[in-house]
Amino acid sequence: MTEPIKTDALVIGAGPCGLFAVFELGLLDIKTHLVDVLDKVGGQCAELYPEKPIYDIPAVPRVTGQELVDALMVQIAPFGPTFHLGEMVTTIERIGDPLFRCTTDRGTVFEAKVVIVAAGGGSFQPKRPPIKGIEAYEDSSVFYAVRKMETFRDKRLMIVGGGDSALDWTVNLQPIAHRVTLVHRRDEFRAAPDTVNKMRSLVARGDMDLVIGQVMSLEGEGGALSAAVVRTNDGVTSTIPCEAMLPFFGLTMKLGPIADWGVALQDGLVAVDTEKFETSVPGLFAIGDINTYPGKLKLILSGFHEGALMAQAASRYVFPEKRVVFQYTTSSTSLQKKLGVA
Ligand code: FAD
Image 1: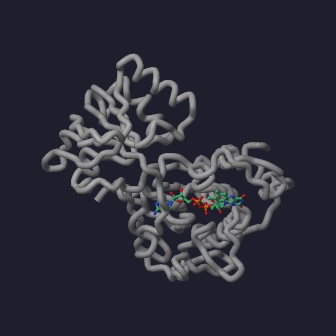
Image 2: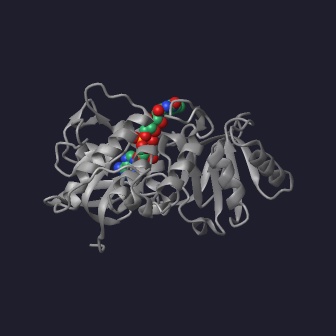
Image 3: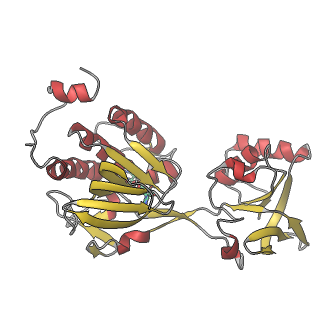
């Protein structure tokens, strides 16, 4: 087994509520690692509405989803949290009183005194395109995210989709791939206009191919892709050689492995009390959109409040001997020192 990473607290989900939890835990000297299946922090705010303004964050009249995430990152920086992005927590096992062993789909193992599930609507998972037999090539030739650009060096690469991810990776991988073919069902793209223009100039210069049509089937053996059969919108079918494919068909949110973690669920959400936001398993907390209790409102401000109360309760597990003293950041020199402002 991989050597476990030991930490006071493991936060599952780096959405706004998971990020703010780091602040509240940090004020109480609790060190945190965070895991998110996405390759960036910010949860729904960063993934679903980065440019939309939010109007109901207390004392912040208007802030976009991404600006809120950026501000939270500045606010938690003094506590130096460690991020593990692009990894999904798959199992949680209670091995002490309390002590948890958590593992991710990439084999990282954590041992944490407390675990905070801040998993929102569940994990974001890529939508699988409707191509028969694609499962056989997943993770060997077909990938839904780029973890290492080097994987695609000198490969004939097919990118499928018309949004930001498809266009960004087309432009970024074109210089290192042997040849890039972008396939999209319409000659219109939802990506940033600047990236679309860059892609069009690469096509005009003959440095990559653009095919308006749909992938019908894949050819290859033993998980190694050799070609894709593509039908253009005018009905012509052709076989395009490629060793790797990146389909970008958007993301869906699924509860995922949380259902197997042994916590009491109610209507697919994690049931918690409203004093500590603790689940049915002592030492395992749930905050933000993933939890439920009478009167729950799925608002960012609710998750922030839940994080503050959770941290007080978590502190009793992490430092059983220590008395938690309630303090204000305005007047406590000790808190200000932790924040690096005194
Ligand atoms: P999320 O933001 O959902 O983040 C959870 C994170 O956990 C995700 O990044 C996910 O990938 C990760 N995760 C889940 N499971 C795992 C796992 N097993 N392993 C690793 N990672 C995992 N709220 C407001 O208060 N005001 C608004 O104006 C507002 N407008 C909105 C507009 C839109 C279009 C949408 C979609 C939502 C809006 N919301 C608004 C709701 C708000 O975004 C959510 O309440 C908030 O994002 C919840 O934060 P969270 O941290 O609980 O979860």
